[in-house]
Length: 139
Image (cartoon, rainbow, N blue to C red; front, top):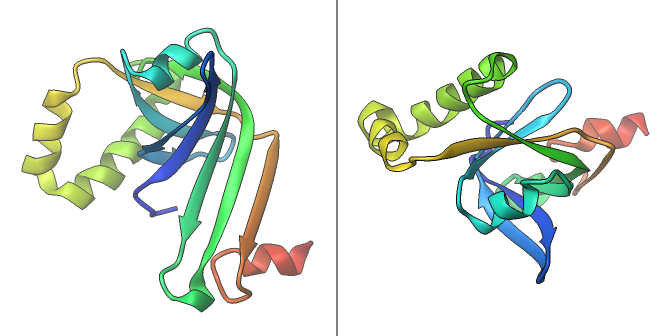
């Protein structure tokens, strides 16, 4: 999905914590960028569960969204099994911000991580003509 931002929800000692994140889909998981030292990173350090909401569309008839829930695991971007998702992540956001802008952003983030959310449940909605209408027809 080409949408730039999803919303990642985790639960910490203070209760729910929701943040906008950059993300990529993979056939078996959803990968969200998480910066070390943040509340999201602290809440996911020992594993845990997460929910990710993605909205799509601009005009009323195009609006739709999906929510994925499942276990989350923090991973360093240099892991060999993350090569594909990290490459797609760089491609997606490098295109959006241009080489100079993305390089500047990448240099500012000193402790990058990815949260891999393995889907256990998927819920979606749309207004009938949106990006998930085919899923509604299949159900």
